[in-house]
Image 1 (cartoon, rainbow, N blue to C red):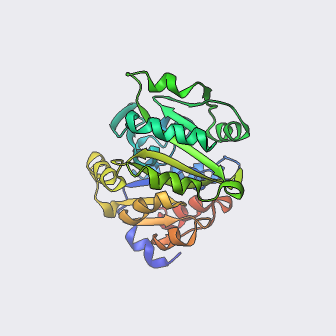
Image 2: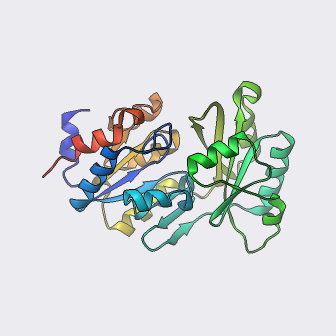
Length: 282
């Protein structure tokens, strides 16, 4: 990392962290050195928050164990949530009328699907993917026919997570995206299933740029006072908008190109390494 980057970090007041592939390694765990670095920068008065595709309920252990309890971004931009007050500041939900034909096509094409609603996530049938992903989230999905939720007028759907094995169905998710432009598809990979491609399907008005602006107002900081860490294409907006964007060494080349600097990979404790270098003891 360029020593000149340190000059841009002297007035950092808020740091956003992606979760999977950034804070958590391939085993879904974080290191003691990361925990120590987070504790250190908070003692300096710096707020720490999450910006992730995960829902808040799958980040509760990070709020509790790592103290990442400042207001942050969840559902790949679909929700602004304040862990300290357990309150939703802003959210974008999926339109059920549009969602119904998408779910029908997902079933027809035998695409893996999880549905996120409220403080839970659901699958219609358990499989090795749902079990592995549940272990990674630390919360197993409930089994339920999606029509039960779709017919519940009091139930809002925040996100679908869909996935395919690209060895058998390459291009399937992109085809679905082309047929449903009213939704936003954010792509990512799951280390436990390297041959699978997943997409978070969220409302089209889940705008990360607008969310970043809302978070600045909420925290009363300027972009120059923000640092962001990430490893995926869905993290690029925050990497670009933050005063200092830090890409993980395990990120793809186009993600690294969007950042101000690149740290070590998640399995080499890249976040702890970067915090130690970029935000030194005063």
